[in-house]
Length: 404
Ligand code: AMP
Ligand code: MG
Image 1 (cartoon, rainbow, N blue to C red):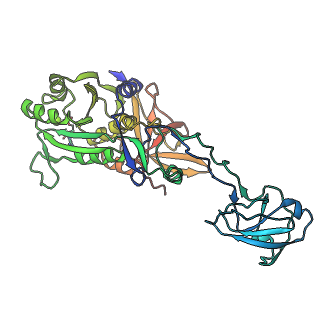
Image 2 (image 1 turned 90 degrees about the horizontal axis):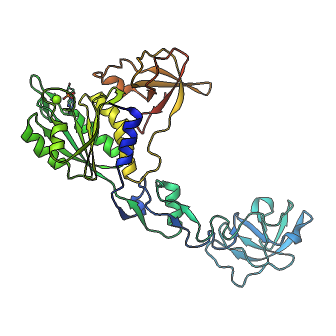
Image 3 (image 1 turned 90 degrees about the vertical axis):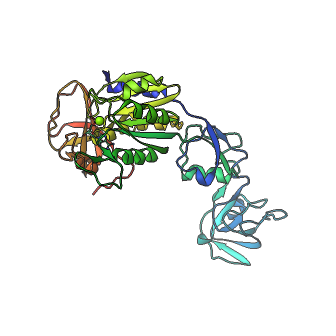
């Protein structure tokens, strides 16, 4: 058995990105940049006005109120060629328009009488005020987003501003999903006696998508060698493979043996985590294979703690673990030392602190508390339980969370 931390580092040390592609900016949200991007030109390209108002010479406006003659008009989109602010004069200027020669300050229209032939200024004027200076945002050649950055609206805005329609990003892994077991029937069929619906495939597909990857559903491997050989073989053609069930020590648990037969190198089996202990991890060439326990709660928790970080790393993400934060327990949590324990929590905020209560029954067969959980506490292996009022570390569970 490996520890929770060992399992994570073995996985993260084994997986790699799977190549890059160029995609349009409109498709890029949530994708990860594969190259540093440098500014092709200075931003802004020229000094321009930050306000609707008047371009003036500060030296003309030392004493207020003062009156200036309006000698021109510069809307956004105009060029300032041939326009100069002469002594004692002002040019009416709109936000974003280039500042004309001679101008060293802009006076907002709100601080004037809004005159067209002449303008009266009410407030003192400081040299440089309300001008956005050439290059003050970024200078040409400066790397403004690094490889490994997740593209969000601010990155899109800046890249678009520099005219970059296509972006180099890491490819999204295709992740094969395979369930195993004779008791499973596919969604859409009514389960007969002893049968259950293959819900793990759907839940894993959702989790894979939420992690930015493309699910490829392989179906169900039945509890016999031939079926496992065929389905696992198919799954190994993807960029990563996730299996559920058939990985414990039961008579019908064939996943690990058949994977080995197909040439996978097993890096661990059994992790010091509860729920989710009988998790296995193997590499087939450069394809990671995550064999998760079949119990739906265990499947989801081991995906969250082990598979999700790996899938993010395969997309070039630097930050792959959800940030942990401290919560104060409303009730005690029982635990034996030895394994990391993941506890489903509900959260409340009071006086600026997060308080947590158990989401309810924590047994691995109880699905409802997974649905209700807003966060997962990660109790360290050595912990022998916590009392009400103790602080523990937790992370949000899922990307979308409603906190009532
Ligand atoms: P196993 O690991 O094969 O012993 O399965 C553990 C438990 O998970 C059993 O109760 C299974 O019926 C259940 N289970 C296995 N596979 C799935 C699946 N694909 N969807 C939902 N439950 C499953
Ligand atoms: Mg089974």
